[in-house]
Length: 183
Image 1 (cartoon, helix red, strand yellow):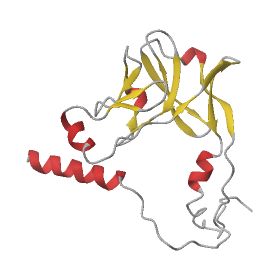
Image 2 (cartoon, rainbow, N blue to C red; image 1 turned 180 degrees about the horizontal axis):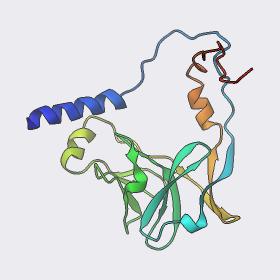
Image 3 (cartoon, rainbow, N blue to C red; image 1 turned 120 degrees about the horizontal axis):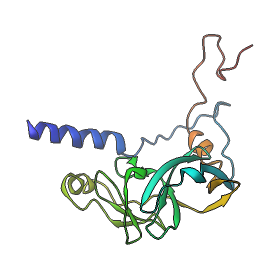
Image 4 (cartoon, helix red, strand yellow; image 1 turned 180 degrees about the vertical axis):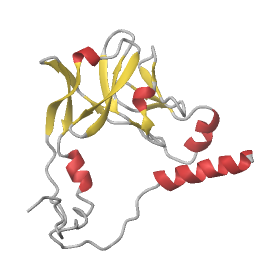
């Protein structure tokens, strides 16, 4: 039974974390969105009153991106992508360590608070098994500043739109429109 559960877990992780299928066909339809240039802007993420205590982390959203806000034991504030590779659980649930890292709560991977780079990839238990299936990959790191009672994070405000530009703009609704608007 344990072998079956383990095999199911590995199969599930492999199914949802692999690379997407690349095809040689590119549609010339007007439904394809235009890729926008990168635009780095400071945008509000969380209120300063919601800033975690030193040694803890919380989550926020800035420019449509999931952000992990971590405060090290000395009080320095960092912003990282909130999706932990290889299985994308929230990094904001992680443990902020004294050595300048934040630790993935499930697989134990440690990421640098300053750069988002991997310091220790899936070091123990099930993490070692799952981590052996994937190359180590870090998380994005972002600049932060305090302004007008909020913590602002510098993000590419076009990143989400550019990511979604690889997908069709939408299915037709009941009235035959693809934009979801009413007459």
